[in-house]
Length: 495
Image 1 (spheres, rainbow, N blue to C red):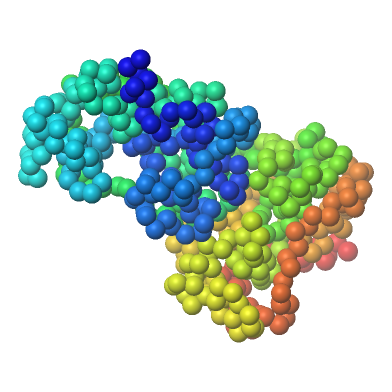
Image 2: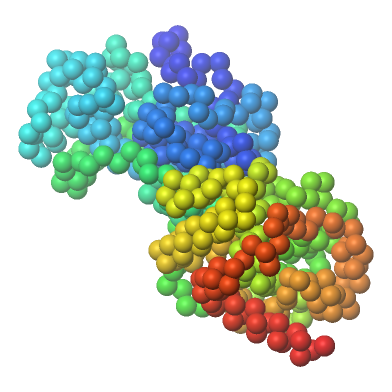
């Protein structure tokens, strides 16, 4: 009975799914574990759904309505989503963070009652000018007390800040969550969620609340071998889980120094010998629906939302092409692509729009959030160009949002794999010429698929784009302009 009395209040009466937070915009689920990046991740979830940072920032835990809990009957939905995760932390680093941030440090977000109690009961020193040896002695006293507390031998309830990570996971073991590691979160989270959240890297960069408080001494300075051994013994199951997750992700870690990739991840149509690499804002909604129709013999139920539903098949192909597969990617006039981004995503109002861009630019670059005149739109286009220029110059291509990542990056990616470049404005004709002899059903599938996600521009290009605006876009995407012209000239020469 003592166990149940000590159980954290937040867990009482909750189903497995109800312990998870979820997004409104995609089927993404997250199990928070305290002292494992939960402040940052809760702020990230808020940003992804609202396009702005939570006003409470580091205190977001005190605003339970800021995030949505999964419903009690969503267990199976969570298991099937492929995007349900938690984050684990090296138990030794987690202990150091607990000691400095919550116990020794004074301030509004520590544990004032507990730290004073530990001062009286175990002789913890709270002076501001402790030496590293004195901090180390504090850590010895704290880990001894935590061991007793976790064995329910103190009169203090087990707290989420030091509760074992394994205990938290045990309560949702039936949900089969993907475990990320806090030290690898920057690259693991985009790998896990990038297919349903193409703006994940930008959102991660925008969220400033990472709750990283400077510490007077590093882990290496603070802990000796005996202390590390004691921490790892008390949290031995956490050590195993963290190491398992680290090994799993190590095999998937991007190798930025790799000179020659032998396999390429592509979108496929089941067993049909046709593959393409998508470029966002270049017909990818239409192509995903077309490939789904080719594979399944019917149109997708909700064509406009096919990106977030894991509906398409994936494959890996080698550079060699002994079966003479059909391999292609599509290029688009860079100015048209830029305008599509603006009208569809930046000032668009649908569930897949990026209103957070406009909110940022309204503060920093004079953006008109609800444009009504031609002048408003031109002001916004200039603001957007400046924003994209800053992003493209600041970040490597892999870290850019794929909606505005230069198209040339796809051309570089597929180089040597035998891909044909097609033009978006002539896509059906060129794809038919490329594939009809191998896939006779392709023209019938094209007739069935109507979800081309065409931009509903409120003002035609010729009216809204001045010569100066056009020059700025073409300068921003100079390599894309050259690529587009080469592909156009190549196809013009074939007809």
